[in-house]
Image (cartoon, rainbow, N blue to C red; front, side, top):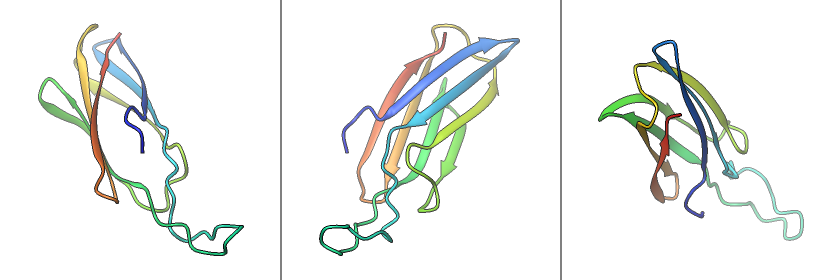
Length: 105
């Protein structure tokens, strides 16, 4: 899986930071068969997504095989300012992990 899978829009409004996030990921359950070979396609899905702001967790999602391809999340948290940075870490069931950042507007 390539790095940089998260697409984020974060904006401060009324003392809250509103975050919209999409993970560009196949979220394969391991239950589908390849149409050509008939073999099961191995499971490959995001297990955890964690968002940090100023050293504090503001969002954590524990995911599994029931989550669809390219999952979308939207949440708010108190505080934040334009120019602040969000640190986002994801972990895949395969053990692959990455950390990405996004700026708050």
